Each structure stands twice: as structure tokens, then as C-alpha cells.
Amino acid sequence: MELEKVIQSLEAGNFQVVPISNCGCRFDWHIEEGDLVDGFEEDDCYEGFALMVDETLVAEHTRYSPLMLYVNGMSETNIPAEIQKAMRSPALQRWETGNPVVHEERRREALIAFLMKGEYELDRDDERYFANEYTVILRELPDGASVPVTREEAKAWADDFLYRGDSSAQAFVGFRLETNQ
Image (tube, one colour):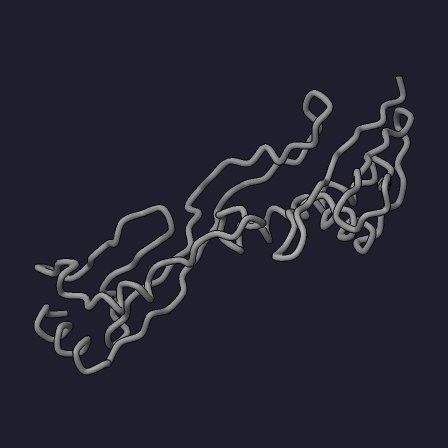
């Protein structure tokens, strides 16, 4: 697309700012030195916004990266400030990880799959009985033993483990591995 057509379209309001995201990361949940770790390998993971004119990608701005331009001769000054502002990801809140939503969903699903293998008994200690303060527990089973874990049980445990708080409460989530030794 020619630069002049892009500039005319932007001035006329004939454009779209659309959210974009992807996550090709791999997750390998496992116990490592008494901790539950996701063992993830990052691959093509981003979120941001794309500027489209007539179904043509003109520019994109992903979190943690500079504005990328895809039209020959185009510079940041050709994109009005209000459009650039609409292309920026919002500031992170204290409970957000900074990862794309699709990344967090895939990470959660991998944890659920790990838990559903039935290699550990799932438990939770509410300690002081505050909704945002608890310890999630994985209890080792005797060698060769397994326990049926439903998807609902695995989802509940995973959500407890991954809880980071929200706008009204900070999370105080602990993890404990109980071994047979």
C-alpha cells in the first residue's frame, strides 16, 4: 500500500486498531527441588495492537517492543498521537503477570493436564481462613500408586495455585510438597 493512501485513510478515520496476540511457548510442569515449576520455553509470545488500513497491516505495537512500521517510507510521525495511544497496551496492574492472556491460558491448561495424571493428591490448607491467604499442597503417593483427579478438581487447584490477587486483595499463596520420606 502506498504511503499517501495510508495517510489519507488515517486522516479520514478509515482504519482499525485490532488486538493481536500469540503464544507458542511450551510448558513442562514438574517438581524441582521441592517446588512446582512450569519449565516453560518461550516461543513467539506477544500481545499488542495492529493498525489496519483496508485489511493491510500498516503498523503494530506489541508490549515491550517499539512501534513496527510496514509501509515503505512511513515514520511514527505519520501516525497521529491518538492512534499511537490506542495501540499501546494498558499499564499492568499488580496482579497481572505481563504475559499475554493466551500465554496464561495455555500455562493453566498445561498445569491442569499435569495434575490430572493423578501422581499427587491435591489439597489446600486455609491456615488463617482468609480467602486470599492459603497454601496449596501436592502430596506424594506411594511408588506406583495413582489417584483419580477430575478436571474440576485440577482446575480448582490450578486456579488456587496461580491466583495472583485482584483489584481488592493481594494474594498470599504458598505451595507445599508433602513427601513420603
